Image (cartoon, rainbow, N blue to C red; front, side, top):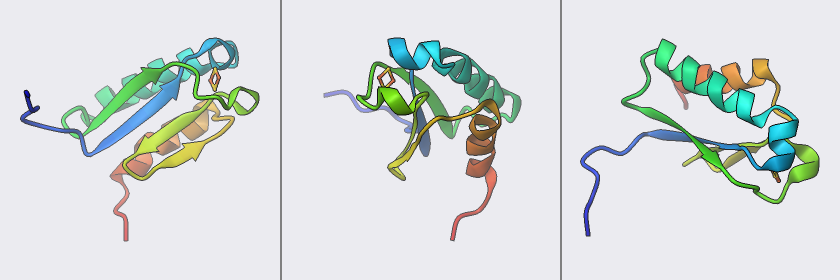
Length: 91
Ligand code: FES
């Protein structure tokens, strides 16, 4: 079994299933990728597209791991806040 030499500290899973895509999921994905790149967080943070997470009525959905936070009806501003939140020290 192969192991990655480096694992991200934080992963944002952005739902890009058909319903979330219609409500802006794909745009959020691109925006969050861009924000991570802009803030030079790539070694620590990863943004991944997912398929439907079965919460379609509350989309677009962003899950933050390993915190296991599920954000519903995520706006563009909220998406940027989520990425920036990684930079804020946690207790
Ligand atoms: S398409 Fe995103 S939760 Fe179903």
